[in-house]
Length: 196
Image (cartoon, rainbow, N blue to C red; front, side, top):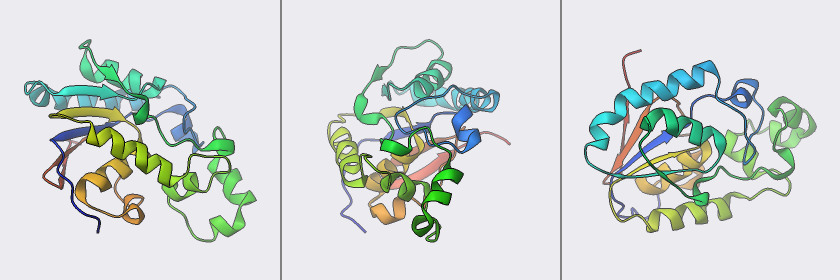
């Protein structure tokens, strides 16, 4: 466990499924568009967000295309800000490559049955977990009130672990769902999801 910090209420949304998510291709700070499923997931988030927006939270989005495409659907034309600190972890030389290829070429890593976060952490010329965590923490420390965040899966795992006082080792094992909203308040997480 890490020391529990005090942050304002946060509603975290992961972008909908993308073409590269579906193909198990590492995106990092590269991009691919939402699939039909991803658009449906963003619409499901839009159906959940109404009561949250009545509280007039700040809305901050990663500037990458897949998150902006998601935010445009979720927010229904409402304005939002972007912040580069919300971009996904940079996977360096592995960005754009299929996970299957990476595991075949990296048997020592594959042998450990790594989480997605561990794969990105190991990427040659990548950002690495420490720098990634530091920029997420800096972003969180700048929050001044209730905030909706629309960003990425691995960023969400690290951010949610930080808010809930969990270790970075635990972060990669947190759920990483699309089409829902993670409500974070007082060090606790609750998942808001529609009927399936």
